[in-house]
Length: 183
Image (cartoon, rainbow, N blue to C red; front, side, top):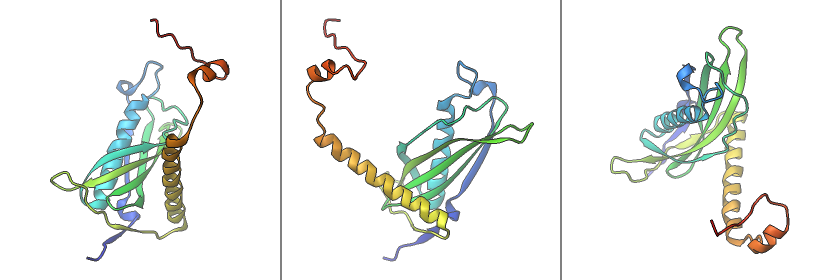
């Protein structure tokens, strides 16, 4: 069986949406949960477009809200597949907000969603291989390899890490924690 390959460009998706007052949190900024929902939608569209299959979100890595988004700004999200495994893809997403009156664009968020392709019965299905055509695409692929290695190291560290007894942790005064089982 030969592997099908597709370019990163074949996965690219861009969506834009005007931010409305109904999208705000209590401080009047656009709610982070609403932005995450849009990011999940574009990750789904990107992974599905690339794989030709329904996709589910397996994980979301490193969501940093860099700048707040205001009501009336035009939010644009750009997504592309940066890495493929057997049935998984890492989709990189960039979130920008544009003040449509001044034209000023700010980078608000970048994130990585791991999407898994599924067949009609819900089983994992193989995704196409990835053709890298620019140095930027190679760099993004390498970043995903580092991200995967760090995730594996983190999981390994969970199995061996020891922070001592709770008594020693409480005595250290390094943590803002109190244990009170009486309540």
